[in-house]
Amino acid sequence: MENLNVWPMEISEGRLTFPARYDKKHTAASLTGTPERPMINRVAFASNVLVGVDALRVHPLRTFLSVLGIIIGAASLVATMSVSDGMMAFVREQVSRETSVQEVTVSSRTSDFKNGEWVAVSNFPVFSSADAAAAREEIAGVGAAALTLSGRSSAEYRGKREMVDATLSTADLADIRRIDFAAGRFFTTAEATHDASVAVLNYALAREFSRGRDPLTLLGEDIYVRHRLRRVVGVLAPNPYEQARHPELQIFVPIRGAESVLGPPGRGQYTPILRLRSPNLEGVIPLRDATIDWVARHYLRWEDRIEVEVGMERLAKVEQAIFLAKLFVSALVGISLLVGGIGIMNVLLTSVAERTREIGIRKAVGACAADVRTQFLAESVAIAGLGTGIGLVIGLLLALLVTAIFRYYTEAPIYPVLRANTVLIALISSAVVGLVFGTYPARRAANLVPIDAITHE
Image (cartoon, rainbow, N blue to C red; front, side):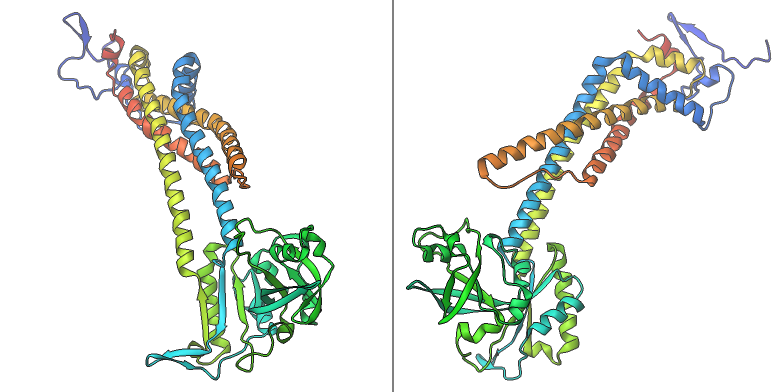
């Protein structure tokens, strides 16, 4: 018996304690004569995890209360992220459709401001359809390229004559502007190349010509555009933001028919604009830089003769709005997860207090501090994982409900967008919350002195 390494104990005031020369850093493994284990092997780790997870099953009410906070946090994360992604997709689509914020324009500089006055530039280049085709092939990041020319003209149908805004272009303008049609189509590349006698009307002009009838009846009809007969091949969809008292009357025709639509050019030649479109907002600035590089390679002293422009101010405002929306969503998600993490910590601290004697017995029979920490951290992560799984489902249902309400009251086509990174963020966040907010209760349980824990009432 004298070879057994057993720590002596004392009875003081009715309590079983260590002698004064033994501090509280000694573990339960020391009581059994075995040295404290510096590491946990895989079998021990798996056993401790199972003990922690099994404790959740034994205490269903406490588990539900702790899971509830994470469910709320995960559901808030998924719902807000899905709804905000859906709203951002809608906003981006509207911005790209209704504005030129994703366009980079290359235009001829016909005049320059020098010494306080405007001076005409004589050697400016004139872009052609061939330049548009070359830009589409050679410039990186181009989603679509078109050549356009604008001006005022007249249109007449069955004796009714209107002054219209005429847009002459290549066939790719339909991809640049994302044009919606109520009926018909845009003119084709072949029609634009051969200057076919075709035209596309916006809904307001078709309505003016229809005289109370269905505006779509103009499809297939012949109208005069500055005395030239043209067949209507398309009617654009109505503009929901149209001013009723001052509707914008527009017509689209192939650019090769410029003189027949706009008349002789005032300065001897027309100066079409080359329009390049980026596939997304993030690609606008790289596209501008690539365009400048392309222009510099094709035109000498281009800075004096060519202007490369992008709606920087409008682009900056759109990007700022999207960034602020993301920050707002991130703040909501962070608050939700913080509340859930505090709930986990409170419940685990209560669990440590209730199971103090159990922890003492585990340490007395050989469990080291790392075993106890692993047990409670496993409980924390299991709570977070279970809550996240349930929260994902509830959050998606909430997102469907919220967007349905949006569609009902605003008639805006907003739908939830559940991205893979949203699910990944939810899973990682739950694991981090479980580990962070479970660390303190786990350390508190691991630092309990076995004898004090066993005699705890």
